[in-house]
Structure formats: structure tokens, C-alpha cells
Length: 459
Ligand code: ARG
Image (tube, rainbow, N blue to C red; front, side, top):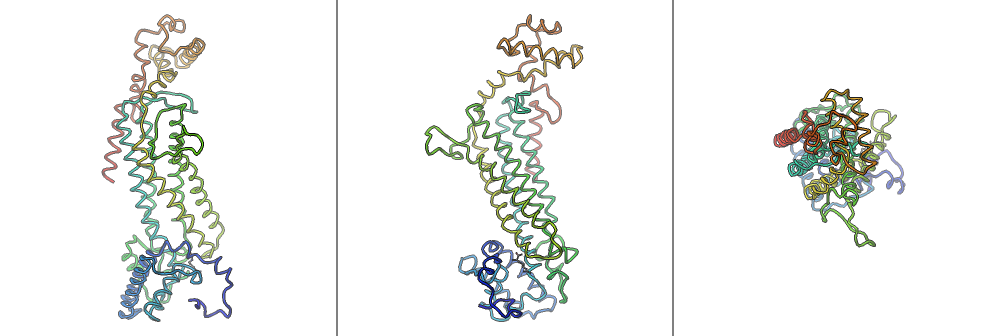
């Protein structure tokens, strides 16, 4: 079969070139958007008097038939037609005859492909906000169940200060909230129409770009035709937002892996979200969490891949830009998979409150609080720090925790200690003493949960 662009050529394309340059194997993903864009384009050609309405009707009918064939899996895509745009145009011409050849009037594949990508990606951006909301919901629900669950908080992965487990989970709700805001904020740049830019310079036909934009639900049209066909910032921005989401998921994954280890035993992931070992019968592995952590690499890779493709590319369209697709599709699939699994995995995870409590009782994470106690009794903080450092050392040498010390033992380090130290040192007191906005005190965390739930309900 001859090429849609065959006129200038005297030879057949080399078979290997055809295979190497074709994108149909992956850009068939854009079929729906390609037809959607073509329907709007041809409607505009009719409205502007560029094509007679009867041609427009024939082309529209034909496009809808091709759409049906694609949906039913009846259209056989061919590598010799290179990409989704030409496969569809070819199928249209097969369907309606030479009038189908009028569809591409005033249009280039350069502005067409960019339009398809915008249409495709904007849908996903909206979808991801919904998926992130689901993960937030699961985290908030667990936070509500664990409003009185105290767990060691860490810095340097060393026990630091006790916190509410709910507070820890709500940190992720905040992280995902920023991700959502970034996606929402990027939407206005995704929701821009490149069509009408032609190959690079605009078109000689009296088209109406704003009409097409409105038909397709875009907020506006690209200001500059060269920019319209050369811009892939909107994809990079998405890949960067996706990378950040994966980075957040991967930090959470790491915590799930740690917390479900025998050393921690803070949580147990549901059997449905774990897998076993082919040799060790006792194993229950947090594979999903590990894989999400691991797949973060490919999502970063896709971002760097495209940044590198675009680096130094002269304006306007270059074939290099066909490399924008696979990474984007792969990132979307990877992220969808991760978010879809994380909401139920979080919802079904069992929290081992006793074990968390035991951990809190066997550490020195209340040490800051006795330092603060001495400060409240008039000792300068730096001196109090030194005194408590010595007290902790004494405990370690005598295999005790602070709450095990008798008042006389405390007095070896400072006479300022009183009976009330035993209340101050209780994990509940330590947690609730941090009653500052954004802190871990139960009242504060309850407020944070309430605000997050209200934001979710409003979104
Ligand atoms: N398959 C191409 C791509 O994805 C479509 C645009 C081709 N344009 C061209 N002038 N060869 O980039």
C-alpha cells in the first residue's frame, strides 16, 4: 500500500526503517483522542466554510465508524502506516473514499499529535487526583483508628520522641495533598490547544482555533505556533509530579517494609497484599511495597529520559519527540497501579498497638521532656541537656529506663526533680505536651484529621 506522503518518493521505504520509525505499536493508545480531535477539527472546517457540510458529514460518519472498529478491535493497525494518525486517516479513506483525504486540510501531524497528547494526559491528571484522594482517605481512616496509638518517632532512624501513629500517617496525607495541588495547578497548562499551529507556522486556511478549543473543552489555545508543536513541558511537568508522588509512595513503602519486619512488628500487611517464598515456608513478603519502592526508579527514569530527549532540540518539531510517548504511558500505568494498590493495602493493614506501646516504654524518647522539665524549674537548657545526658548514660549502664529510676536516683543528677516527674515522663504526657499547631498532641492531630476530611469532602 502506498504512503500517505508517498508523492515525493521514488523508492519504497526500507523495511527496517519502517519498523524503526513507526510508533503505531505504542501510540495506538491515543486512538480515542485522535478521533476526538479530528471530529472537532472537521466540524470547524465546515463551520469556517473550508469544507462543504456534506463532506464534513461523510468524514464524521466515517470517523465514527473507524472509532467503532477500533473499539471492537476490528481495525488492523499497520506499521507501514507509521503512526496512529495515519492509520486512522487511511482507515477513514478506506471507509468513505477520497473525501476522507480532506480531513487533514489545514492540519499537520505535528499539531495533531500534540493535541492528542494534551487530550490524553488531561484525563489522567484528573484521574490521579481521584486516586490520590482514595489513598488519603485510607490514611485518614487509619489515623482515626489510631488517635491514641503512641509510637516512637525517629530521626536518623534512632528513637527521638514519641508521637501518635495517627500523626505519622497524617504527614503522608499532607504530602499527597501537595501532590494533588501540583497536579491541579498543572492542569491549566495541560488543558491548552496546540491544533491550528500546522506544521510549525500556522496555516493558510481561515481556521478558527478558538472554536476547536471550545469544542474540545480546552481553556485556551497556544499563543505561538512554533511553541505549540515543540512544547512537551506539559508532559515533563506531569512526569515530574509523578516522580514526586512515587518518591512519597516509596518513603511510605520503606516504612511499611520496616514496620512489618520481625524487628519492628508495628504493622501487619494483609495477606492479600503480600506474597510468599518459593523455598521458605514461613515467609510473608511485603512485595507490593517493595515493588512500588523499586518502580520509583523507572518513573524517575522516564522523567530524565524525556528531559534528555528535549535538551538542545531546535525548534520546531523533530522526530526525536516521538520518544515522548512510551515513558509517559509507562509512568501513567506504573502510578495507576501503585495508587490503586495502596488505598486498600493501607485500609487493610493491621496496626499492632501493643507492640508500638512496648517499643515506646523501652526507650529514651521521653528524654527531651525531662530536660524541658528542668528548664521549667529554672535550669538553663544547655545545662539540663548535659544533666539528662548523664542520667540516660546512667540508665544504659544500669539497664534501666527513665521511668524505672527512683526519685533518689534522679536526685543524684539534680535536686530539682520531684514526684511529678513520673507523670511528665509518661508517653501520653510527652505526646500531649506538644500541643502546638501541627504538633503531635491528640487535640492537634484530631484537628488535623478534621481539616483533612473537610478538604477531601470539598474536593
Ligand atoms: N508519530 C509522530 C510522533 O509521535 C507524529 C508526528 C509526526 N510528524 C512528522 N512530521 N513526522 O511524533
